[in-house]
Image (cartoon, rainbow, N blue to C red; front, side, top):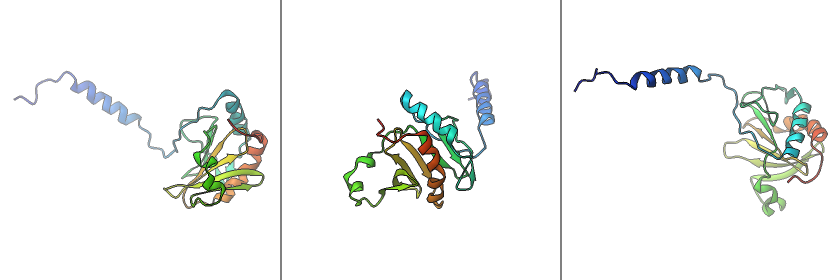
Length: 166
């Protein structure tokens, strides 16, 4: 068997590997899934994007990939905001309403209602309640959550009116 005989596909495959490897990103930017809300909610989320602060909990804004007016981020590891998410299942869970769910609780910070959920990786996920769009905020494990909620309250109140989201 001749291992050195010409292989017609070897060169194109090798070239493709070199191109793909050369194009891969070495940065540590966060990646998120961009929500796909209806038009009315998208408009509210775009308004929120314009109202968001440059800093949250002392961290500078550094938006995740792919870039979208429906997502924002601060710091590394990033505090991630996504606007226009679907209502979390826990938001209508009677266990949460009764205060008997150890991983989820409702509360309010500076006039914005939140559902707080502890996640398996140690991070916390907050989702606004009683607003016309659901806004989700994920805070990495080990980071204080109160600063982020306080810093975002004014922008959320300004851009996303109270009401019940679809």
